[in-house]
Length: 225
Image 1: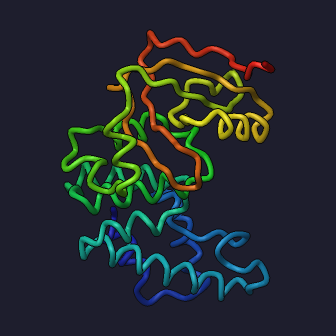
Image 2: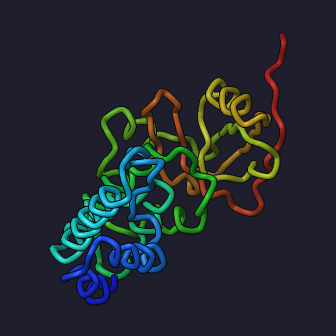
């Protein structure tokens, strides 16, 4: 993070001049500034909007300097949070239970996980200690620890997105997402080793799966009998 470049711009500048700062910050750190149509009420005047963003930027910088990496990640817009967490884990050795707690939180809060697939895969790697098990609740851990060697998983998606990371043990959940995405239900028989996590939140019985290339994903429909 280019703190010096931002700090220099923050000191002794007028509101008008600081619009240049926002342009710099958007270029260097996409995802940390509030959108006038998002976090900031769109009826704010330009100076109030600018002041709000500068204050927010100062908070992001403070979180970074003080090593509050969970806060640093959460300050980003949802679409940028996985990238920010990967940055924190790789550049600043952010790890441990707090890392996994943040990862679980941003995954569960994401509106879609169909983007940044390689980044999500890197974040869920089990060699990052102490592993996802450290933040699963009792029921999630029981399911995750007792999955069979071959897991039947379902996914609701369009064909172009059928090999995503988010699956379910529950066909009803897959049917819901198939309808929501104007797609269909897919089924895969997955080796237990490819399941990176299990989350029970939102009653979705969700599996995070890194599908091996050899696993076949087929269309699936319930039998009427």
